[in-house]
Length: 270
Image (cartoon, rainbow, N blue to C red; front, side, top):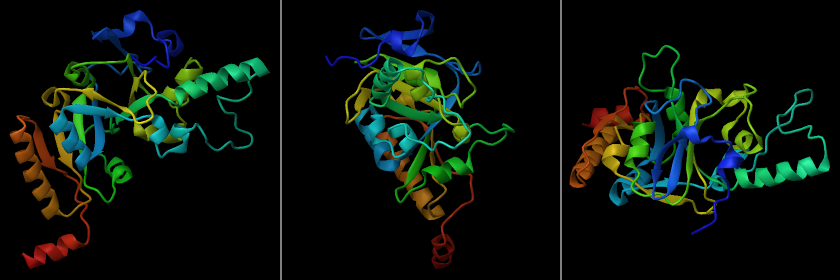
């Protein structure tokens, strides 16, 4: 079995945060905010082929953060503005710099799955236009809805310890080095409202965790950034696919009215 790159002592997770043990490995929930609990609703934006793989193979992919496109998350690089201090600067000595460098190396070789609470201030909407826009691509994107408890309950086997935590957006929370590099981001990212699943594994290609999709997924929403005709088509096909794999979940098109230009042409041709 591969050696774990972090220890519970490193990540500063206390025993009372353990919520479940699977195959001798522990799952911890540590909310930096008091609002985070097992019933917290979370969402993940995922490309359709990856969603089909999740359902078909009944497995959940957790990537290594070295595959992330955001340089802040990939290697810890970000702008340093003159006159503004960074939480990772001003270390007092060379040994201290070496210690932080070692911890940084550990933190940036971890496997992490990023989710969002998709939080709206007024609490009346069930979708977020800007989050859809951020994850839109040439591929069809879907959004999975679930909650933290469902993800934990869906896991069928586990080869590494796992810590689940929200992200602190520079509120000066008392975090150690590794926690800062994993669970703290600039205030400019606060609208992400991110929840992270940290798996103590450093495989460059990431890892798969076997899950029960029926428990893992509560709802699937199709992206608004494809034509209405395509949304309806994907929705029907996805329902058939799920039924063929004994998965009974709610699947719907987006409520956001944001269609590409060919939507109007398609409607005239019909």
